[in-house]
Image (spheres, rainbow, N blue to C red):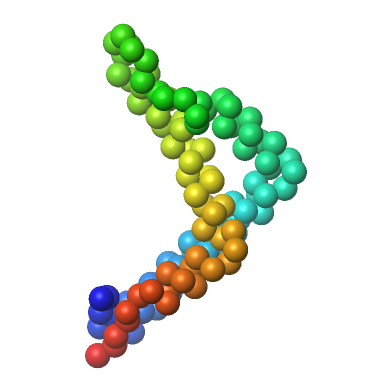
Length: 102
């Protein structure tokens, strides 16, 4: 249960959710076009999303960290697009919060 004791907390939480919704919408608009989907497909292949970053016998941990970082960027873009895919995520998130004011 989340208790928001001050109106400012409620306003701040609402503002953060709206910013998240807008950011998600921006990702959906930017990557949701035919061209955007082509870019995502290229990134998926380039970032090795479907490959394991670990290579047996690898001695350079920095290489593994770099490859995993590439994969994380692609996954973040896809995550942000899914947040707004049907317009329900933010609304469901707010509805799931048990907000009480004193």
